[in-house]
Structures are given as structure tokens and as C-alpha cells.
Length: 112
Image: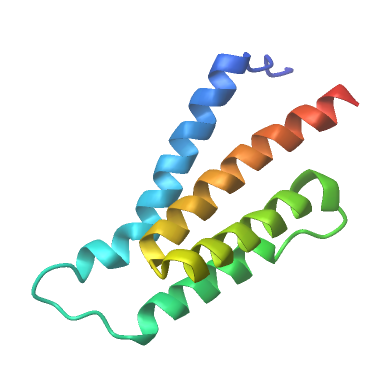
């Protein structure tokens, strides 16, 4: 049984839902340590390192499909952190850019 293809609106909704869930999971440690608890200084760097490794771990042979969007998202995340020194903003920029780039590259691949 062949699955029916998604409409463009369904794809946008799926991407937005994925972005919200991904961003929420990335922000969870900051929510936990907000308020009276003091966040360890090493936690943001550790979170960012894990996210970068997780993001780049399975690029493999699909460099154009997922590799370039992931590498660009890592550069955007690092650049936004360097610019604003705010881990939360850099995670948001990285998440949004990755989801947008993935959407853009998936359309470029289907048009070729």
C-alpha cells in the first residue's frame, strides 16, 4: 500500500510542529534551571556540543539532501551565539534555520 503524498500545507504544518518540538526539547534544561536553581557554567556548552554532534552524526552520502542544511545550521547557530552570546537565541536560530533549509533543500531535490 503506497502512502499518499503530503500537500504543501501538510508539509509546512509538519515542519512547524517538528520545529516546535525540537526547540522545546532543546530549551528544557534552561526551563529546569530557571529561577532559584543556578545553572552550571558548563551546561550550555555541553548541550550545544551534543546537539552539534547529533546533528552531524549521520550525514553520510546524502550531503546535498541533509548535509548542507545541517552544516549551514551549525554555522548559523555558532554565528548567532558569537554575535549575541545568548545560548537560547542561538538554539532558536539554529532550529529555525535548519527546518527552513531542510524544507528548501527538499523542494530543490524534488524539482531536479
